[in-house]
Length: 50
Image 1 (tube, rainbow, N blue to C red):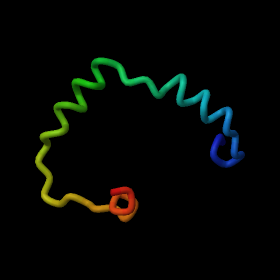
Image 2 (cartoon, one colour; image 1 turned 180 degrees about the horizontal axis):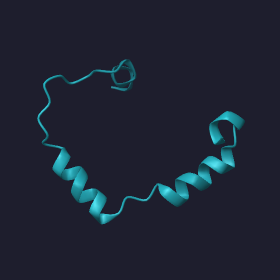
Image 3 (cartoon, rainbow, N blue to C red; image 1 turned 60 degrees about the vertical axis):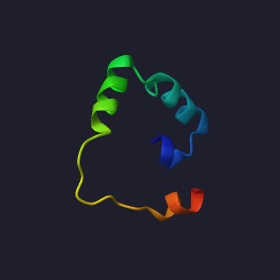
Image 4 (cartoon, one colour; image 1 turned 135 degrees about the vertical axis):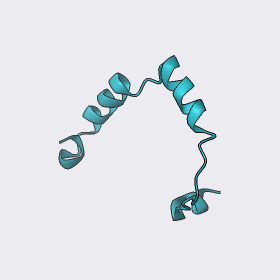
């Protein structure tokens, strides 16, 4: 409901509470960096930000 109601403070609270990257999450993300993929999607927004 945060997005539907435009609750900016609620979104900040949500990120503060759940947006923490733990050490175990860092290890898992590092393992996924070398996961082979057949197709790498390219998004327009990524092109615009380069």
